[in-house]
Image (cartoon, rainbow, N blue to C red; front, side, top):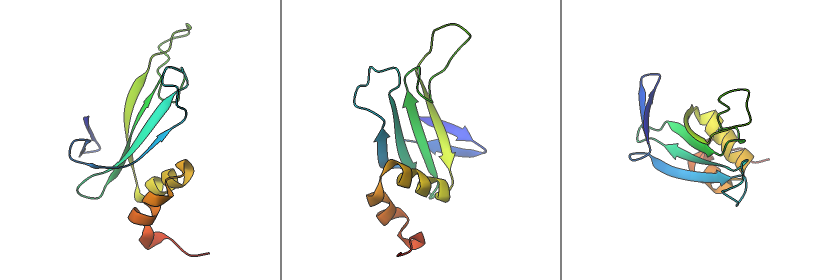
Length: 105
């Protein structure tokens, strides 16, 4: 997947996949979603999110009952990528990618 956002090219083929999060195992569930965190060769972060119709990535085309699955690419700052890793429990990625901003308690 490749998209240009704010004058920057984000490409899953050239970026490094760092982590993945799934909200459940049942991929046929209408609330299922999957997010994958990537880092570009220039050090920029982005997420590619996929979701079924009722997930946060789903599209609700109108007032009717139908919802459609969709995929979105979302650029992230370093702080947003760090927060995403905390929220999704990807602590190993925090240790590798963000060790310079970690503090001991």
